[in-house]
Length: 234
Image (cartoon, rainbow, N blue to C red; front, side, top):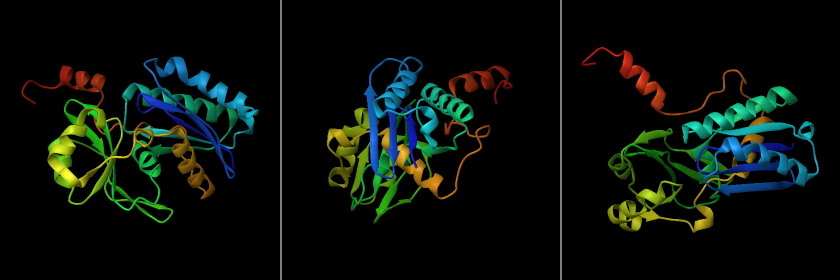
């Protein structure tokens, strides 16, 4: 089964094609151009370089969050549009789960962290059991102090949150904080595609109309709307 994975949840995102024979292509960009500018050209290039058409893609997987609100909206709306146009099944994949998937056979718990801004971190804890990824916590938005209190054993951290919080993790957790090399610190669209492919092969697919971004907290627009209409003192 040939599956296209789309990840627009962080600044480093991309598009990948994964089949039963392995990764066909995996394009990753970490540039300041918006996904409204770069996503469709990446999809087109992936198909052209693989020598296939969209109609030959048998399934779609998209990172559903948490992550950048704007990036998630663009990624999901694009994936939904492709699924409707081509009739392919679509699945959403947790951004944090896909990141943890990139460190197979890791002997320690894995903690992907994303900078949620406003002094918070998106995180979840996972561990590998052979070729299975076991979720230890739900995806959550927490303060750095709350995250630190969750770590009781050597744990591998990855994600764009390291750009902001690596020194804090090192200073407070000491030898409990482990970090992969730079090439293994961010998510990959191929991991989204592979996890999505597994779920599609198991018979799971999401309702295109119901699939929504996993924000974990209200967007700025929603907060402004609530503030505008909330009673004084609420």
